[in-house]
Every structure is written in C-alpha cells, then in structure tokens.
Length: 153
Image 1 (cartoon, helix red, strand yellow):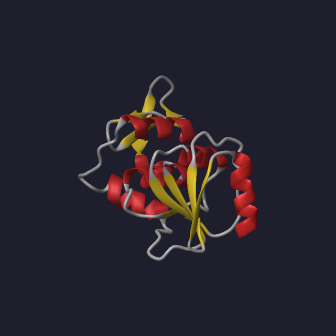
Image 2 (cartoon, one colour):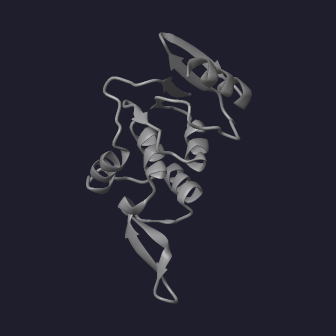
C-alpha cells in the first residue's frame, strides 16, 4: 500500500528530476521493468527503448521514430518512477499532474508526501495510507481522500 504523508517529511526528496536523472539514467543500475514501461506509457504516452531511452512522440525523421534519453520524461512521470523504484525513500509529489497522481495512487507500495492540498484525483482504485500529525488512516475511495485532505489542510 502506498504511504502518502500529509506535510513535509524529514529527508524527503524534493528534486525528483535530479534524483531520477542521476539514479536511473546515469547509473549502471537502470533496469526498466514492465511496470515502469506501463507507467511511462500511461503518463507520458511514449514507449521505452531499452533501459535508457524512449521514443519521442514529437521527434521523427518522417518515417521512423527517434529515440531520446529518459531524462526527457515529465517530472510527474519521473516522480512516480522514483516512488516505485525506491521504496525506502519518500518523494514530494507537488509537481505531479492528475495523470501522474492517478498512477501514483495505484502503486502497491512506496512513500510520497504533499505539503498542501493541491489535487483532486478523479479515480482512486486502491486503498492508500494517509499519515499526518502522528496519525494514520487508510482511505478507500475518493470521498474519504478528499475529506481527510480538507481536514488536514
């Protein structure tokens, strides 16, 4: 189950782009599994080519797609991939759009935090654990999620 912390988290990672680019794209430990490929396709609408490249939806030579670095993924996509790949760390999700937030909230595990009420997710398919003010509650639907966010923020 995803842990979503409401408020700042000590040692939380704010710079998702930098963390992703260094730890996945610049690292030799950059295996991209099927779940990551699905997340990338769902959020950014692009295909993976190997472990460090994607086909750009904007770049082609008239006939063929052009492969570019995964550093060009959106910040929201990088954030969800960071949470998925690094379950021992907690990532800030304030720069995620709704498409990334939907994928984030559907992760089976991981840690993320927000420091203000900024999103309204139209779909919540899995339970999420909200952690705030030394309390924790599991929310099972959008109404419960919104209610807790309004209460805390």
